[in-house]
Amino acid sequence: MKKTYIARQAVFNRKLETIGYELFFRDSAENQFPEVDQDIASSKLIIQNHIQSDIQTLCMGKLAFINFTENNLIHKFPLMFDKNLIVIELVGNKQPSTNLVKIVKYYHEHGYKIALTEYDLALHWDVLFPYIDIVKVNIEKINTKRLSPAVVRMKTFDISIVAERVETRNQQQTLAEVGFNYFQGYFYHQTEMIEGQALTTVKTMMLQLLSETSHSTLDFGKVSQIISQDVNLTIGLLKMVNNVSTGTDVEIECLRQAATYLGEEKLRQLIAILALSNLTSDKADEVCKQALITGRMMQTLSAKNNFSSVKEFAFITGLLSSIEVILSMPVSEILKTMPLAKPIEKALIANDGVLGDLLNLTTTFISDNNQNIQQLITTHGLSNEIIQQEFLDACQWCHALELSS
Image (cartoon, rainbow, N blue to C red; front, top):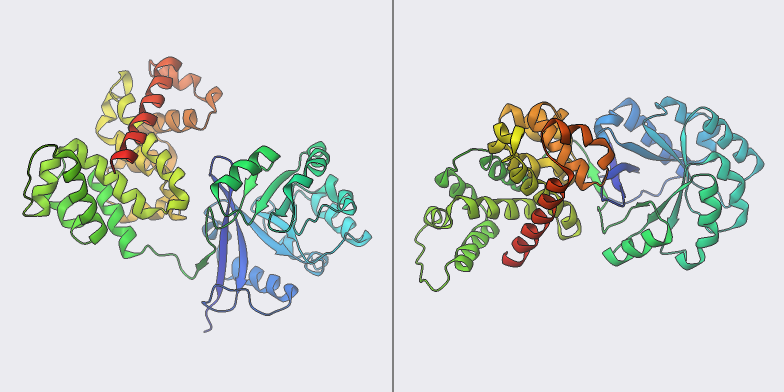
């Protein structure tokens, strides 16, 4: 039986949260678009993605951005999908025909989200604005300084704007100021092939290392054994020992000695930095930083009032709060590789229990959505001032880690 291939690339909001994945048809393991007609590519993607696969698993419950040509729309291919799961991406049109406007209006009235791609600032596209939700702009082709008048017109219809081909952090910051809501490109997430999802050996090792921090007492022997399997981890451990051995000559004879020398607190910090940096890339370091800040903030808040009962689980739960984004896998699948305590699993999967409340409180505060946590603050005997201070302290702690690592 011939294998089928689908590639995907994440679409992020301004907070680097994944809101969906654009899906691409591939006819081989080579991550390149095949030389086939767009109609055929879309049709094959639909068959592979909807009949042979599970779109919710593939996109981890996020939106699936799928290319549809006008011909695909006429044949009502999008109706094969739940309207809540997909975004119809219009492709293959140089300008909107009268027929295309009618078709787009039809899907809009049926509750489907629609994205206009290949947008070139031409005024003739405005006729579609009442019926679309998203406009995607290839910033390699469009001078974003010329985009402002179009942004004003789009805002009248509450249209969101996606920047495609974002390559650098400076681009993202500038584009957000212009008015872009979402971002897509290699700066965030290189297009990846999906042919059965599996964790690499290195990532499994990193998760094992992180899971060790969930225990109230660290097993120095086990930690050093995991670290010994990777050269970069070993170098990182020895570098940290060198950084803390001020004015003292330390002769390290084995990794366990190095781990023990650091002590539990610094070793937990080291594990957090090394494991998360190996799970992410330098292009996703903001996600890594947020995980560190969340872990530290949960750890310090857990020493207060009602949260003291989950103190030993708080730090690791915070560290793993972004693991789904980092690995582009459902958290329930990731946790199968990690022997974690039940309260941690329940908190990460469903925000359940006291630990779930602490996770919800912390992550919601960090995402600047305070109106939803006032009840939690009151219930657990905290105040906005305390939480704000712990957040600032956690940010300073994270910055200090960066400087020392």
